[in-house]
Image 1 (cartoon, rainbow, N blue to C red):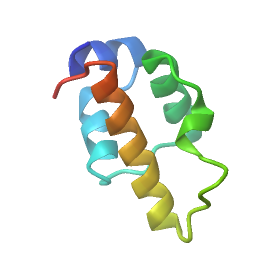
Image 2 (cartoon, helix red, strand yellow):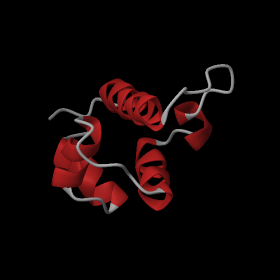
Image 3 (tube, rainbow, N blue to C red):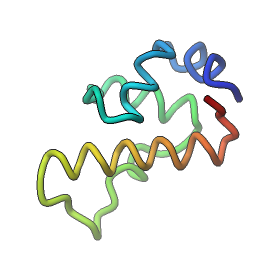
Image 4 (cartoon, helix red, strand yellow):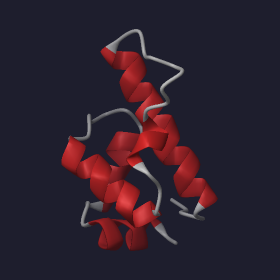
Length: 78
């Protein structure tokens, strides 16, 4: 899946995907759910229960890392 395909599948712009991954934008819950659906992953993967973030910044970093990880596993190339 290319970045463009992820954007088309999720309904999220290609630029927004880059911004989220680069931690330049904070995704809304709706955006996260769309990305998860496109990547065919459960939203719970983005929020591990055994690792509560200590700050909003850490939460955003965790979400960005998870999206990057699952994009790569689903062969999303930028």
